[in-house]
Image (cartoon, rainbow, N blue to C red; front, side):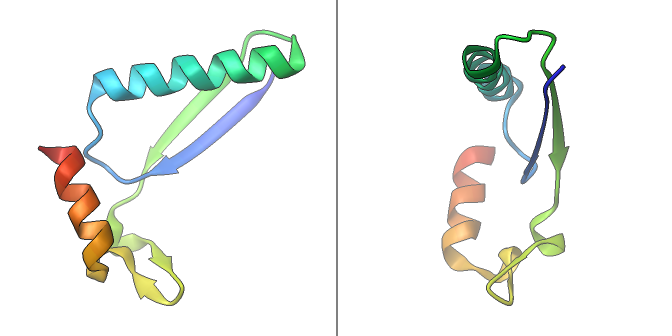
Length: 71
């Protein structure tokens, strides 16, 4: 059984999560033809993630994206 783990910021709505896991599952099933794919979603607060030595919560571009998905 394939297992997929996704780490993403909080704030994404349930409808978007459903669509994402359906499409990811379909892609994995198409590639492996095994079935019973598990997808785990882990939400990480932007102040707990850094990219290129900078907290995501301090990155203006990331803040803008997070505001957009949470509204």
